[in-house]
Every structure is written in structure tokens, then in C-alpha cells.
Length: 500
Image (cartoon, rainbow, N blue to C red; front, side, top):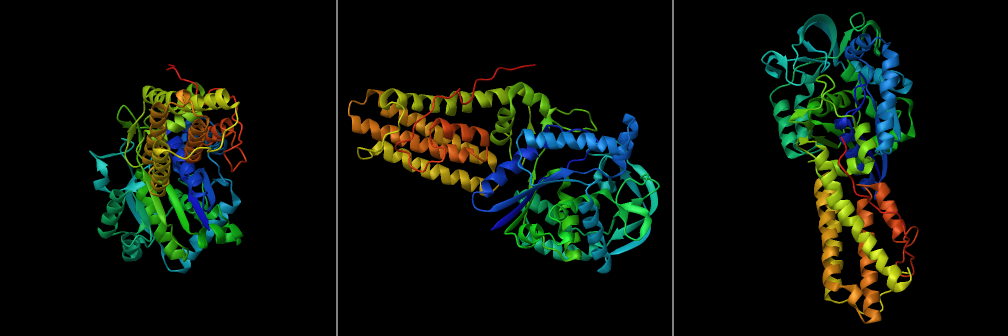
């Protein structure tokens, strides 16, 4: 079976901040988990069209193309560093397959009679790249960017979104489109059932200085950046070119999953499925909606200037420490505040002083008592071993079930619980005091067996550490535990110190 999974495509008017890293890490953990059973195609990229790009480039004194290229390269570098395995990275301003696919989807919507032209007047927030209704403003300002929108009047092309309200509501209500968590599903259902109005889907070529994808058959207009950007998901698979990847990973896929932030829920749960319905393409199956990363209670925003540079954090603490904090400590659904102290404390407690210390103790005993070779179970499994193996089976399943629900924090909680169970077994069993050779063999074999289980469940969370752990246990490319030779390795998780 096949699964498609995407991140959103971050806006390339500036480099990445920690919120982008959070989404990348979530998407990668989900993809690695799903790949245990499915072939998974991961799509990411950068959103490079729109008025905000033009204005940001002008303010920085460079061309829009140069700014897009520079910032896009930083997002691609972040994806590699964390690391996120990406099968296709779409740049919307330069990718010819993206342009062709966006225009073809427009034509299909037009052929369905869902696109028409009329004059429009509204309050436009450049930061959001969207017209805002009065009830979306807080004291006359954009709730996200804290600026007053600009009154705008022009002739645009419109999409008959209102035509799809009933079908959209039904698709969300019966979980053909599953929205995680349920609170976001209810929010989107309320929005849809409250009535949908047609939306403007183009902008004046003159106002946007020609930067964007031209509307088919109308050079005076370019496609509205969100309408252009949303099509990247199927364009990454070459849907308009007849690429076999589209048939396998979208049309014929078991699941089509978008990972996204809560502030873009409306675009992905309403606009995008309606566009797909109009064009006659299959709908996404899952929308996984995360909260924001906060700094002192405020959302990270390039516009607000309170960004946290993920490369700085990685340089000081390492990619694994940052990745672990976000998956172990941050809620998959709610907002989460970042501090350096949280990162260091969580890493040192769970990894350096927890799992890493446990692996070192167990492998040291195998080297000391059995010359580094993992023994077989030469004595029957006792009550303590039986309980530990049962815990390993139960908690390993619970970890996978949590990731099935896209709850990475719950998955790590179950993994921590299993590490504590091994530590408790080690204290009660005290293999170092065992005088009976066969009983010691069984205890050491059981410890390595359960550590192998932990290493496997760690793979979606910390893939590099999982591989190092497998190597330390001597289990790379092995199915049998007995006879494996443990390896003396550098510390699995060196302790961290706060840096400022």
C-alpha cells in the first residue's frame, strides 16, 4: 500500500524559524512510522509567489527571485539537518511542473463552471495574503500580524466555493476527510455549516508586478498565491503530466495526509478540498493540525520579529536534542512555549541520564560477564523476565498506536515508561549478583531483547540514535539476539549544558 504525506510549504520571504522545524519534525516522525507498513511519499517545498514576496524583496534591496532562491535553500537545508526525508521539494516560483499543474487544475475548475469574474472590494492583509472579514479583525487589525489591512478594490476571478458547502460538510462529518484533533474538526464543521461565500482567486498582474503564475487565458491576472500554493501537493506527484507517482501516491493511495498549522486550517479543510471536488480529483484523507511554537506566550512570526533560529539551536545543542524536545515535550495539537532550559532538561533526563545510561550499563555487563557476546536464554524465563517482556509488548504496541493517532508526545511517553520498566527490572534482578550462569544468561538476553524493542520504537523519533543503539547492541543486520557481539561505542547521548 502507498501513503502520501506533506508538510505545508513555508513562505519564502524570510528564512525558517522554530515553528517550521516543529512541522518538519512531526511530518518526518509520522512518515517514518507509516513507512513500517506502507510505501510513503513525502512532499515539502517553499511558497514563493504573492505580493508579500515582492514587498519583502523590495525592502531588502534584492530581486524577488534572488530572495526566493536564498530562503528556499535555507528551508531545504533545515529539512536535511533535522533530518526530514523528502521525496520532492517544490519551489513554486521555478518548478515548471508546479506551474503546469496549477494552471491545469484552474482549467478544470473553469470547465466545471466554477470560476467567474467580478469586481471586489475588501480589507487585504499582506502578511496573511488574504482578504479578512470584519469578524476576523481585532480592534481593526489582523489577529495574527497585528497590522491594519489595506482597503483594496480590483477586478478578480472568483471560485464558486459556496457551491461545495454541502459536500464539504458531509466529507468532514463522515470522516472522509479526518481532521485531527477533534476540536479542529468541530471548528471546521462550524465554519462550513455557517455558510461559505465565493472567494477571490486571482490578483492584478500590475499590483503584484507580474510575480506569480498567470491565470490561463488572462494575462492581466495572476493566480492568488494560496490557490497556486495548495496545488503543490498533487503537482509534486506530476498529476498533470500523467506521472505514475500520482496514480500510486494520490489517486490510488491508502491515505493522503497533510501536516499543517492551525492558522492555515481553513485553506486546507475548506478551499483545497473544494478545489479538488471541482477538478474531479480525490480528496485528502487526513489533516493533522498542530499548534504554534511560542516564545514568552507569543506565536513565532517573521512579521513580528520574534523568531527563534533553529540553526542556532542545532549548533548549540544538536539536531537530536531539538528534535526530541519537540516530539517528547510539545503537544501535537496545542501551542507550546520554547525555552533552552526545557530542551536541556528533557534531553539530559530522558536520554543522557535515562536511555543512554541504560544501554551503557547493559552492554558493559555483557562485555564483563560474557566477553561481549549476547548469550541465549539457557534458563527458563522467571517472573521478573516475564513481566518485563509483557511490558515491552504492551508499551511497544501503545507507542505505535499513539503514532497511528498522530500523537507523538504520547508515543514518547510510552517509550519512557518502557525505559523505566527496564531500569526497575535491572534494579530488582541485579544480574551482577547472580551466581547461577544460566540465570545470568537469561537476564542478559532479556535485557538486550527489550532494548532492541526500544531501539525500534525510537526510530521514528530519533532515527540516527536508533541506528547507533542498534549498532551498540550488535544487532545491525541480525534477527537473532543470541551470538550478537555488543560494541564499545562513544556515549549514546552525551550530557548537554545550557549555552547562551
